[in-house]
Image 1 (cartoon, one colour):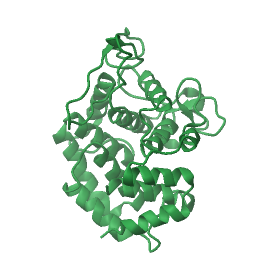
Image 2: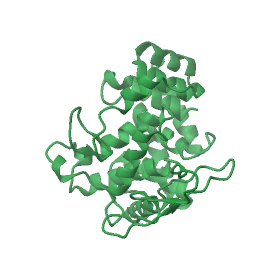
Image 3: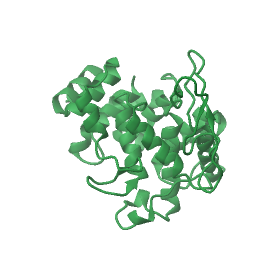
Image 4: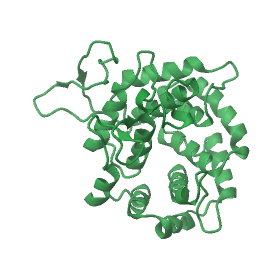
Length: 301
């Protein structure tokens, strides 16, 4: 079994203030102090995204999704910085439902985010689509207002298409909150689904599979998602602890039961790969071990 207490102790001992605030929110729902939120939200560029490097001026889809994951662990997706970032992501969707990094980043983007590369395009589509999927409803308009315009929101199909308006309605009690970007997410889901091969595989990186599979699961494409899950479950014993933690966290985030067979396989692998100090190793070196451990804690909630 996974030793959650040891994992918590690892984050407390090795994490920075933002990491510990993420842990507190994941474990108890404790709101972070204002200075932690300001630190986590810092560096946002004017258009709403975050750059790939500190001080950068061009927002990156990949970097923005990474920052949204951190803010999600702080319960901050409904705060203005995250809402601006989500609106920016929606506005960057291409007419075919996909995403691609700005051409200005071509010389500095890593292979998985390189503009013009079809594998990178599918990964970014799954990543951006996933975060727009779990973003929750757009906040209600001020009292007396019945509708609000929002770039990329339902009724504003995308670049080159006419804008529209969005009516806000509260979700049913106990229901998963719908995304405020339903049409954007629907196009992303269809774009990802259209690339799937007959055996359920996808022409991109492994991470694109679990993000796309989670997006399909949330959208109700259960058969297509299950085909991806079968392939992922078969890969779990070969995967790193970091990948399994992120895979499980993504599916849990869209409401998959912890008793689902894929979650059971992931939990078993995380139990086998937990280090003696309570953490899990990152694929990117010891500096990111706390990040991996937080992903595992998120997956095992």
